[in-house]
Length: 125
Image (cartoon, rainbow, N blue to C red; front, side):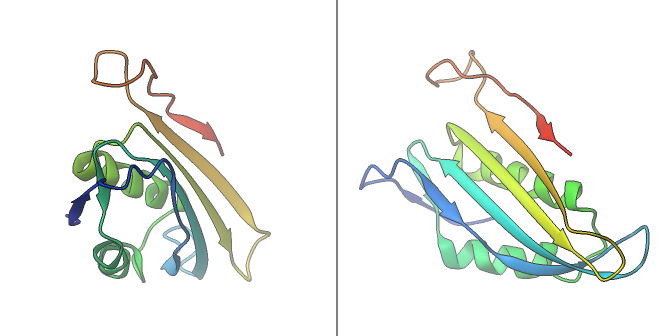
């Protein structure tokens, strides 16, 4: 869980770029991740220190694929902040293979209090 604040300043886009390390469950090798999170908030925004703590506790040094990491970030922000849209790009670098980047996106469905956008799922691997 992450703390949230009211979006009292009407922020339209939030970009967070945490860097962390995980252990690849397939190769057991350490992998450096750069996670680029772009969020279009609604009425609430994440409290950034709380987000940093969440990354340290839930992502850092865990056995995760980059796809799992992207999904965890989206799930967290959807559950806590109810955003209009989120785009998460995860770039992975390891000494065992070339750099890999995956992108996962979320947009509110038409039935929500949104402006008519839909869940688009994964947009790249």
